[in-house]
Image (cartoon, rainbow, N blue to C red; front, side, top):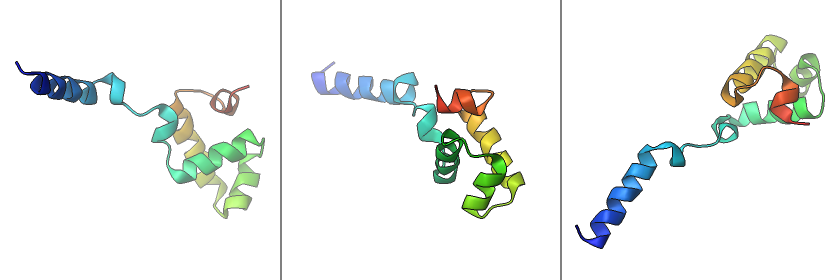
Length: 81
């Protein structure tokens, strides 16, 4: 096998494997990222809803999606120490 073939094969194996998976934070949508920032600022669901002009139920759904994507159970874990 020539060098270029070996490099190409390795690159495709890495792309298909764990090494190229996005980090959990990169899997968040723009809106989820905004909600995460506001959670980190210690805003409540109701306050976040007001800031983003969304119903609180939507914000609650977004927080649940964030927790699922980051594999955490609370905003303290999602936002860090």
